[in-house]
Amino acid sequence: MPILAPRGDVDIEALPRLQAQADTALAEHGAVIIDAGSIEFADSSFLRLILTLHDQGDLKIANPSFAVQRLLQVVGADTILNLYPTLHAAQQAGNG
Image 1 (cartoon, rainbow, N blue to C red):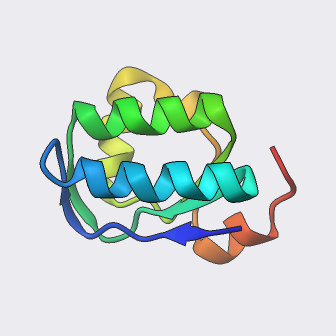
Image 2 (image 1 turned 120 degrees about the vertical axis):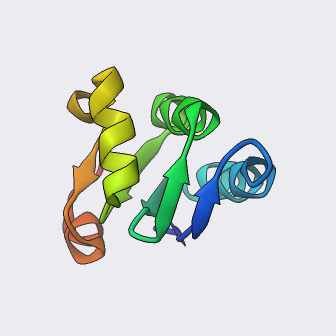
Image 3 (image 1 turned 90 degrees about the vertical axis):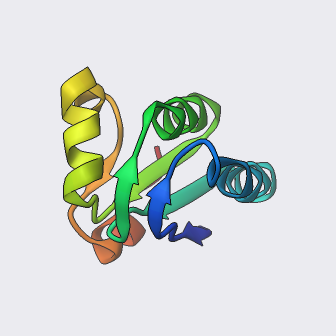
């Protein structure tokens, strides 16, 4: 399963590259892990991307940073997404 590890700010400016990588991973593998431990800021464009990816395939979010955890909690997305405390846990988890 491909692993994407965005760093720093994941906002509307950084999103096109991450979206292209995620779209490719899902098209080729049907699954992707986002290692979110180095994301310092994430806005609604990141939220929209991960919700879309979740609908399109097997998305796992590993090691969510405080910023990512907070964003997901505020909108309740933490209850529907596949979140894992570590990258290893995400890799070991079964499909879907």
